[in-house]
Length: 170
Image 1 (cartoon, rainbow, N blue to C red):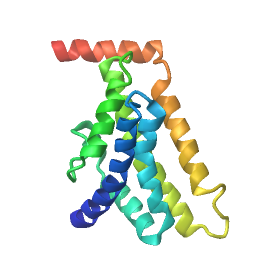
Image 2 (cartoon, rainbow, N blue to C red; image 1 turned 45 degrees about the vertical axis):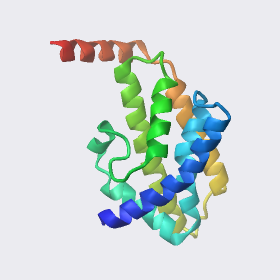
Image 3 (cartoon, rainbow, N blue to C red; image 1 turned 45 degrees about the horizontal axis):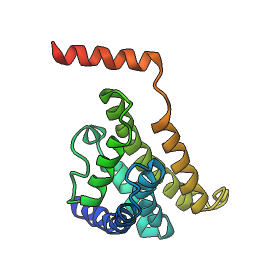
Image 4 (cartoon, rainbow, N blue to C red; image 1 turned 60 degrees about the horizontal axis):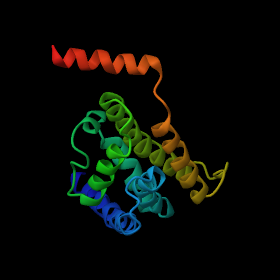
């Protein structure tokens, strides 16, 4: 199973590398939408084939949530994906570190989970059809994820981040 996941991650990474090169060429490393799209669009390509959709579901099944708290892209060497995650962290300088970390963890979970959901819907519910195209799904997903990253943290979240920082200092 690890070999299948690695093969899938490597294929997505190859597609992502092209988007990273475009971001670098356009000097757009601070553009949240371009960065989130660079993570999502290569995954969306897998919606177009039964094998790609199976890969999306498999990744969701074997991606333990605790992996999100470690270094990005631990399964396979993924310099493009890792670079996008670094840029994302740098593009959110006004968020307290703990909140930024939690948002990036949530971003990972949402990408993996929602692509698996979409793949399952495409393969198991043809009688209801899929509302909207995969392109609409992708662009709307990117909008939602960017909005979540940009949302001002609530007073409660900021206080929870402060409490976490105090716990770590103690």
